[in-house]
Amino acid sequence: MRVAHPTRAFWYERITYRTMDADDVADVARYAATAPAEAIRRIRADVRELAHALPPIERHRALSWVDGGGCVGAIGALHRGEPCGFSLSHRGRWIEWSVRPYLEFRVDGGALIPVLGSTCGPY
View 1 (cartoon, rainbow, N blue to C red):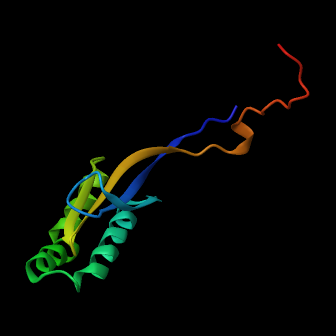
View 2: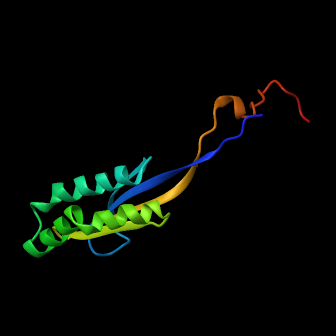
View 3: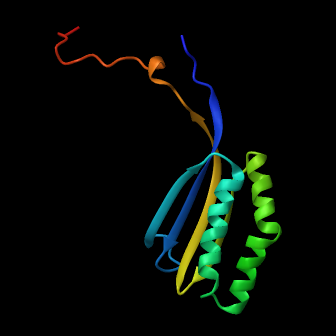
């Protein structure tokens, strides 16, 4: 019998709200990463893409997180098994990024129970 061994993976999510109201979701992006740095790299790329259009104070805060201790702390939190995130206001919208560790169970086909076809009679 083959046993599935869990591996640690990281669930990345970016939610964009039309307003500061958490019920007004405009867009959701989700991604599973295999390493903390991979998940944080996605946040850094998103934030850098938006940075040019941010007001100076928000741009400084965003780039400080991207290029400074914020992303390093986030990677550290993920290595410790803790979730992390970042958020900012952009053109009247609110954007939140979060990454959460989870256990992923990879099972090869030989470990699955076959499904019986419809030709099988009642029990």
